[in-house]
Length: 262
Image (cartoon, rainbow, N blue to C red):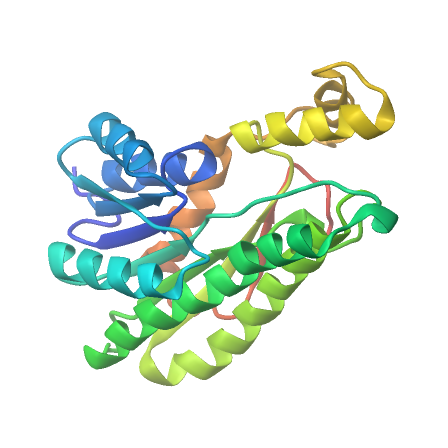
């Protein structure tokens, strides 16, 4: 059976675990070759061992411009091209407004916003050089969040960073479409990943909750009645990466169990 992404190539930042790893598995099952990046070589190697021969992995720190440029160039050379970029890597630190530090602010914006922008830029330059056609556009998918749609008391910086991702997606889409590059975004809700285990512990610290208690509370608040799973995100990513979405541009799609109604 031929997949919807047969012979396509995909670069996924933060693709060694959680949502990004789920994307990698799904896209390989649809016929793509995938490159995932992680913060360490060990993370990348473990992911490739699980994903199999249609994958490769690199270490990349999104805070380092030279690493972004070098890694994108290596992936491009190894894959032969990059048809699809998924800017998935991100970090979060919960802090009350009066406790936010410059370091926390700088780290979250460096990875969530600047990392997204400059990886998108590096890949777009290669896509532009290939003179993409209307019926075979480059695809860029940025990972926003429901947190980018509304403020959260303990997540002010994270929310602001994801709002910036939504805005960057719109601007990049309008600028890059003349090169036949489609840019859109996905805004997940609460998804059961290692990141949310960290968030749960941080909420526990500030709200006096036991480990796991916040996750249980939040799950009950989702209209669909449960936490999301990385597999719940994959369908939208495959759709946006495929030719089925060629006429869609500058949109941010909520995949959140009904938490945010657009």
